[in-house]
Image (cartoon, rainbow over all chains, first blue to last red; front, side):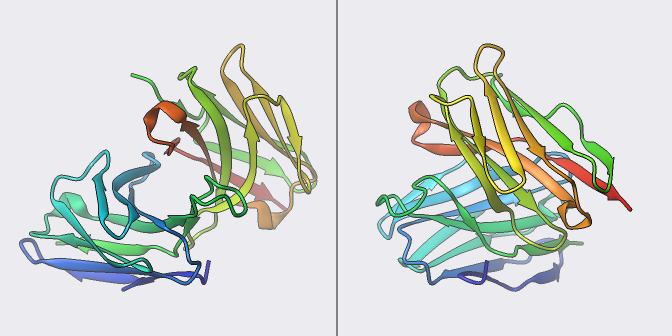
Length: 116
Length: 113
């Protein structure tokens, strides 16, 4: 969905490096999410934010941190990357204010991260 | 533990046939379900949703069936086309879990010409 963009789309980094993945949205949604996808494990929630001043840990937050710089921007950081953080990372947004399908999440195209 | 899961990781169907993708859930507090389609190299996209007060909902070539008695959800795709090849996820919403979606592991649908 072009309304949710992620940068970079692909990244290869070395163990111990700090990495930041960025997400921007033009949908005007208040809620944003970061997921990790591994083969056979579906999508697992890392962090989520219901508004600029709200940050919540998800299922697998250890080793990650986030920043909600503005309503439209939500970045994910790996403080010291390790090989088992190699995965596909998705950002998503949703609108809690009742426009359209209230609980639907709109996903970005994903970032493929490889930690060597 | 409670989970949303799928019975089969891969489903192969002939073009033109109907496809049925299944999903089991275990949380009786789940009251809303979504099916997503993920094509290669893309993020998941919404297909269809259903609330727990319904047992069937139809869209364009897709139908979702919900059986609350056995906690089972299915996605039926009519006249499957090559463009339907993708990974399909079900997700459930639990009002007692902060209105968060929980995703299943996904089923890969492969359409044979």
